Length: 76
Image (tube, rainbow, N blue to C red; front, side, top):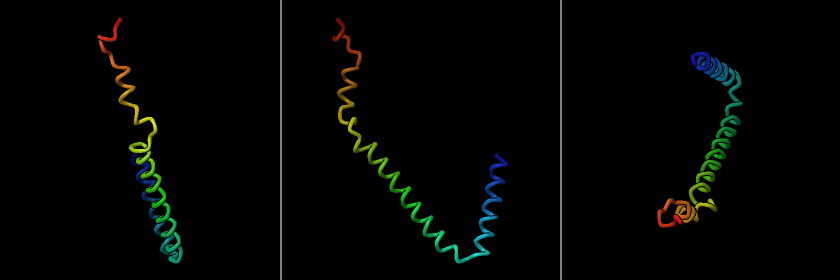
């Protein structure tokens, strides 16, 4: 765990050093990171919407559970 933290510390230090050396790269990097975050947020929202709202099997889950329930009256 400590090695991973040390790696990220060195990685961020090197990234900061590179950005300070070449400041005109900061604009395009900001645009790319912003677009990437927006796309990831959209993918997450669509996945949540599909699971909660658009799942075609979600409508008949209750009827399937009732048919599988253990009811002593159904025993022959």
